[in-house]
Length: 184
Image (cartoon, rainbow, N blue to C red):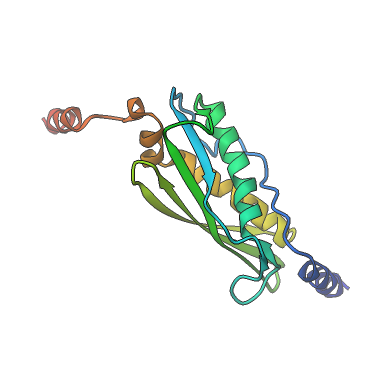
């Protein structure tokens, strides 16, 4: 009976397209910081047709997925003092490039992998790959994978440095002085 329910849920989930709804950020996923920076976050994904990524899963609209991910990213930036402004001179362009899912046999688990690119107006280029497992279904696996993607972006020291140079942990001259002192 258990396998029958699993098979039916797989069939039902394979017929639907993925509607991105990143989960709310869980406490502790983002290391808090305070910034006075201003940034414009741009959707860099132009693929808006439903498509199935790789060898299985459900159809995905990558542009809509990127847009929903940007909403959570902007929320996290705002909570840490960053002003999100479409007219800002600093810009970050996010593009969810690939989102694919696949179930694996008992114990029933779904895996979702998200690959995304981020570029900034300063020339920074980052690629992210996030994997999430869920015992519920493919949609939950992907929703939380998008949340983990946002956490990875916000926690990235290069992104924080781009947002606000005052967040640099140690200027190069100070860092070399610290390492000399700690070596004594």
